[in-house]
Length: 109
Image (cartoon, rainbow, N blue to C red; front, side):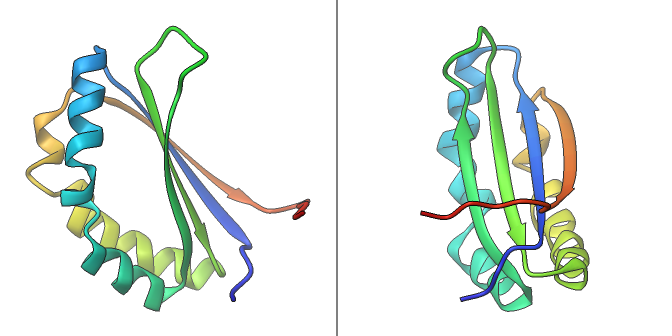
């Protein structure tokens, strides 16, 4: 099993809960199993979609973990082509904030 060294948190805010729920419902069409398998071969270690529940907003966060910088760069090129430029993505009104992080401390139980 690969260790994570880089992480990418993509925070996406929607104007309504209905729009957020539609995004969640269509998420697997944009992030297909075939795409995730290709990304895993390129160094994606883990991907998680989260939904904020403790704030008064309509937010999801995509968390992606990569083996190293080379893996991240390769994966980002494919994600841009297959997800960002996907016609489904253009259906949503959303504010996207992308945070790329280096793991500096970690605890695993």
